[in-house]
Amino acid sequence: MASKLDGAGIEKLNTIESARSTVQTIHGHVERMAIEIKAHRGAGVFPQQIKRIAGPLQGRLKGHFGMVADLVTGMTLALGRGGSDDVKLRTAREYVGQIRQALDVAAYKVAAAHTTIDAPAEEPASS
Image (cartoon, rainbow, N blue to C red):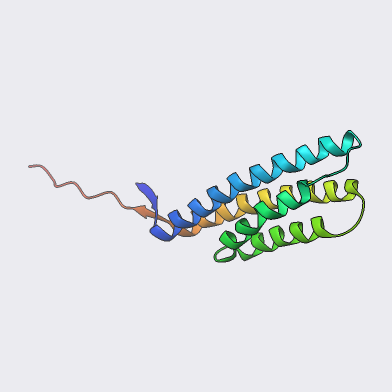
């Protein structure tokens, strides 16, 4: 028996994979921000860059994965608030982890909901 995804499932998984790639880029910027903060140079432009990258990500996720899109929105809002750079860094790291976990759960749910199992074809009886 073979299992396969339907068209909607494939499209949703493509969206999730694209989002994972973007989250990896955001994670890179967060860690570069951490290096700058540790060197006592401040966060610099990294919060703005992260917000610029997160905007289109939020838009892509909004259609099918609203809860994950809300996490992305929360991260952008947290980076825009006042406060110390250390708090912004910790918050950004937490949000990146939550978004990754939410994408993993979403991928599992999509695979479970959109997978169909094909029954094997009956073989003709030989005489």
